[in-house]
Length: 110
Image (cartoon, rainbow, N blue to C red):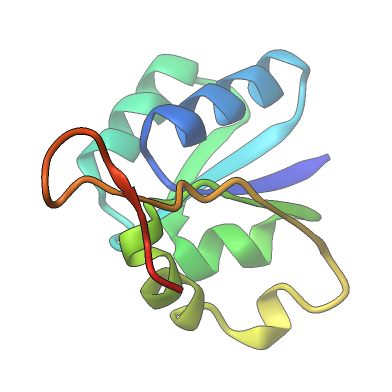
């Protein structure tokens, strides 16, 4: 199955790696198609791993995982064409925590 994972942080990389290990094709998406963290993950994961921007990954996946920092999630989602996720299952594991004031984090205002 083709799966899009939006986000290059710990959660996105963990989910993407587990899916690759299960034999799925995974495209990791970020703000930039040339994101260094995504490129390192592709190099480490080898077969079945690719990278692109958020819209590329969303369009690629039959299922799409949102693994984003809550502070930037809405901007990321707005960068995706509606057709890229139309009729697809989207699983949102966005982290809604605000670390801007240090620890402990607060919940983002929605």
